[in-house]
Length: 450
Image (tube, rainbow, N blue to C red):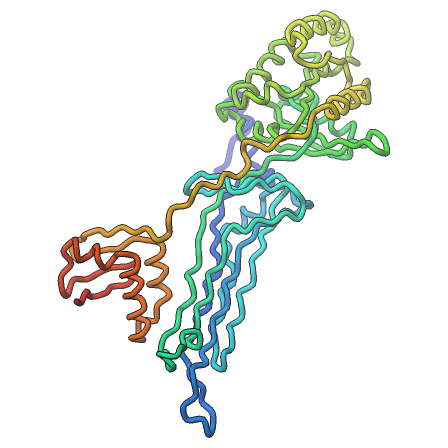
């Protein structure tokens, strides 16, 4: 839909509306994605008997199928966005191949490796559980295991049944809906109101090339830069886009930006020396941080009063410094005056941040590390009486039904033994199942017979 840029409505946009409009760029930084993954199905085992000249009664030689491929997430350090998942949202690993005669095992399906950025957090979309926090380069996480291979009839031969006409189909594939969330990994996060000079600071001290202009919301995506202070000391800075009032509630896409600050160890809080009320900006940003995550308020913080090269800023600095020290009440480091444009006091600022960073102890185990809850018993089941028959729900029994060759009587009898061992047959009788009733298990329809 076209927009009339000369209409009064365009010029009267609120800051939030302008921000959302600018952020709609198709090439924007992508830090959240939802994908569907499917592991490979296990290959089917087969029923086969040895057929060879002069060997009229060859034994069973049906081979097993191959294992289905796993779906694996792997951290690739050269990635810094989840934009790949905007183009592709469905991933499937290769199925295992069917077994063959002469005890030939089917080929296993290849594992599917999906590359993600360092700092990617993996959630189960259906349960909301956190599955993995992927940080280290090369780190892997098997998010969906491939189906087990079905057994061929050679595996069922014994002294009592030397010609088994029974085999297993491969275990069905597993599906999962995932939500991926990227949180930048940086030592130091640069925060402040729009147009305070965050991007100018990052550009001045690193090789990063963020977009810079003299209007709010120039930075529409987080930027990373590496600062090399000396041969043995380098730090990673993240320029977080400007925060506005209500960011903790998601206004102006606040959540998408605030979460990138959570991984940083130290904050550099940039104040605009020419702003109408720098102290109000200072209070607003700290309030938004605390409301989004109380732990952000306790992070070490250095206030950098920017644009000190301007006479107006230089004149108001002494009083503002006194007020800032009073407001922080010893909670944060002493504020420092800088000019990101003129590169005044930047080295002192960075060394100050690096010294604070060095004093921070190694992080303890995060509260957000994956929590693996006790899984439900796969042998549990539920029987529901329906108008047309009986329906059985349960992970183990549904998997067994999918792996059964219904055309072989021995396979059917084996399935009946599974029903009996799980207690399903007895419970059906107690619930009043009758001869000829239909029993539904997944997509299969079975007729009950005593």
